[in-house]
Length: 394
Ligand code: GLA
Image 1 (tube, protein in one colour):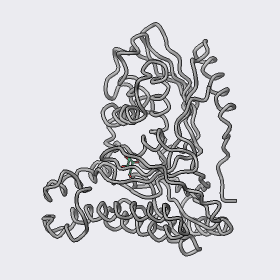
Image 2: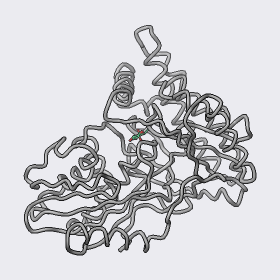
Image 3: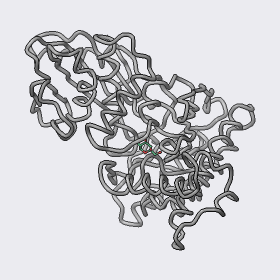
């Protein structure tokens, strides 16, 4: 059994559940229900805020937002995953950090459109995107609400505008200094494809990713160790990258052509900035290599070693892996995975493995056995078929 997670993947059923819960909560039916997925990144980690390349796929797991406008000038936010408490305040009182916690993410999106929402808005969310697992539960939340609000009050906004609206909620309202990877994946991915995104120009290409025909499977392993971006490590890495770019005299590390060009970097002698920059330069090259393999029609198993090299770079140069993620990657590759790497911001969360379908159970078992022998909590695993991006479901 490679999948430990039960999922309802029927949009109609999920829409009815959210509509019903909204009506129970607010005493009136919502105007609609919108769904936005989490993502798993195939390759291209921490490149997004360096103007680089990424290659995510959307998960089948989504967050649903049931939304209805009000007339009393208030915002009310409810979640089926929370403790049942409704967060409510005047639209006029929205400010960065107010409200805090999970409610800050949708509130930040509302804040971005507050001129259009003077009458107020009620939002009820329901999700099956694993939270804190490096799978972009926060983008699923902001993007479901962003799409809902644009359909209701700002139809002129493009999907790229919504990427920006959702990112601003995280950056400016919640205070998490992310790039655009997660929001782009949630809003722009299409079923059966990976999204090749050049974050400098927000230029995209849908790259067909039919692993099943090749007898392959993408397996996600959620280590259950949590991460959060609003504090420490992520922001440090971002600042280090900006410092390295500044010392090299380039607008962003994206502009460094190759590793040889890093010889010009004065890293103060401790090697830290060199390591950070080397990860970004080699990671951008890995994204292009993987895209090249997938476009060429050659056996997609060839991307496996590139993924594993990406993990080594995140572990040794970017230094954001954990013992659990390293154990997962080691055990998976030893058990026959073609490639394996940690995904997302780091310091915990999930890994993605590329495995032959007929080896998937054996690889998942090997990872579980390694976790048990190391005394780590049992991981959750599920397989991923590239799913659709954000959409209206009712
Ligand atoms: C988090 C951020 C993204 C990106 C990844 C690392 O998911 O939200 O913007 O930087 O980490 O690739």
